[in-house]
Length: 129
Image (tube, rainbow, N blue to C red; front, side, top):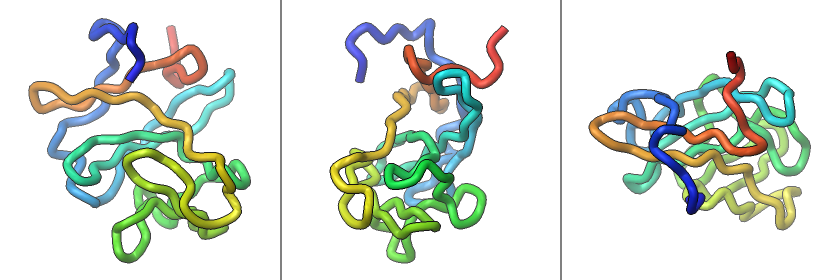
């Protein structure tokens, strides 16, 4: 997590209960370098994690159906286009053409039954005032 992260910078994402263990992800819009992109949050081994919805091999969305990112055994995040596989907790590539490049993490926190995400220098809210 970023050392200088402040709770004031946290943006509400969803209720904690919306992220079921190894279930459907919560998909949301962000902006990276001014380009509108999708990101997703899911729960794996009790931890809420989020990444940009972009395969490290070719920058394409990975879900095979809206919000469905895990493989059939629900062990890895998988790109539906190329079959690249990523560790859910770290985003590290474990198989496929993604090489040593992993997924781009979006920082999350969870408190009082809510999940929050933190904009960064590069990843911003999709529609800022």
